[in-house]
Length: 200
View (tube, rainbow, N blue to C red):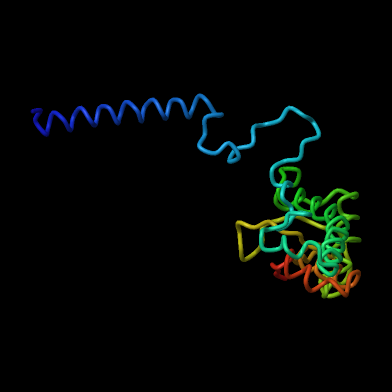
């Protein structure tokens, strides 16, 4: 019978050899990951969206959970899903633009938006902020991207006033007010399911 020490050394060598083989294989062959859905391989297509633009909202259209499947044929549920899709189609372009502004390297911290992006943000977001007049104050000079003053890991949009002052505003609050104004009958349910967060 082999001594316990010899058996242990043999076992450890075997484990180390398997570990070494596994790690070398994991580094050289990306397709051998545990979950192939965990990493999206880079695409050579010029029109592919960056990863931060995918899955823009909590729930995509017609993504029914098993709980909701038995409601699918009920008329009220179907009306709600149709209206939900209509709202998503309406707000998705500005959400995509805002996420691109905030998360892409297109704008550095302290960078002012281009005329085209600024026009979209002012007309489709800032105009609907519940305190837009207070945010604009003496006048709007530009829109800027920078780090949040309290939460330094977070980038947000700022109104730069004509007097040189600047203040942040929440695009989520703007979206909530837009939905409340344009879709009053369905706004609260939509906001509860898709636009929960908010700040200043």
